[in-house]
Length: 283
Image (tube, rainbow, N blue to C red; front, side):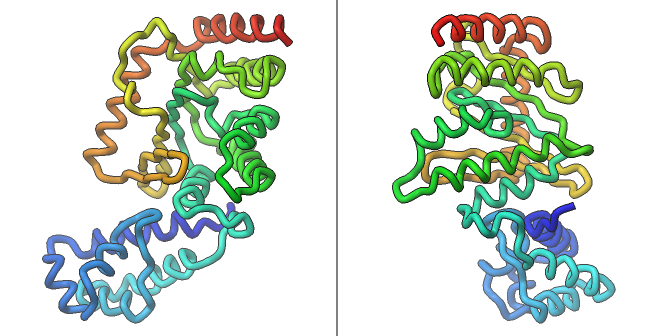
C-alpha cells in the first residue's frame, strides 16, 4: 500500500477531536498556550487541517489524560508529514488530498453534468479535456500523467465500488471529435460489464432534477479509516466538505439523482450504444 500522509493526517485529526471529548475548546487553547486557529486546524481533517508539532501533541495528550496514546499518535504524525507519490507533480493542495483519498477509497460515487468522470476517461478524451481547460502556465502533459496514474486504482485487487451518474449532455458533447468520443463511450460500455461498477445516465428527459445547480461532485468513503467526504471542483478552486450536514445533503442529492437517472444495466447500455453508433457514423 502506498504511503498516504493524507489519510494519516485525517485519522490524527479525528483522534484529537475524539480525545478532547466534551472539554471546552477555549479551555484547551489556554492550557496548551496556543491559538484557537491552531487547535481548530489540528482537529480538522483534509486540506484545511494541520499537523501539530511533537511538543504540542504531547501537551494535548497530557491535558486529555491520554498519555498512553502518545506513541501511536506520534507514529501517525510522522506518517502525516511524509512525502507522498504525488509530490513530484506539484499538485494543488485540494487536488492532492483528493488523489490520496481516491487511491484508498472503498467506494466512490460521482456525478458529472459536463464531463465523463476523470477516473474512467480514455487517454485521448482526457488529453482533449486537459488541453481545452488547462490554466495559464499549466502543464498539460503533467496533468494527463496524473489523471492516468489516478486510474490505476481501478486495477487494484481491492479497488473501490464505483457508482457513476453522467448527464446525457456529457455523453453527446464531442470532446476530441466523434472518433475520440466513440472510443470513450465504448470504454464506458465495457465498464458496465464489471460487477462493482454501476453507470447511470441522467437523460434530457429527466427534466428538472435535484442537482441542476451543481455541475459535479464526488462522494468518497474509506471505510477502514471511518472517512467520508464530498469533493467539488471548479476551474480555479476545489472544496472538501466533511461536515455531517453537508455529507447528509449530498448523499440525499446523489440518491435523488439515482432515482432520476436511467436505470442501471440494459437501459443505460442501450442509450450508450445508440450515442456511440451516431458518433461512429460521423467519424
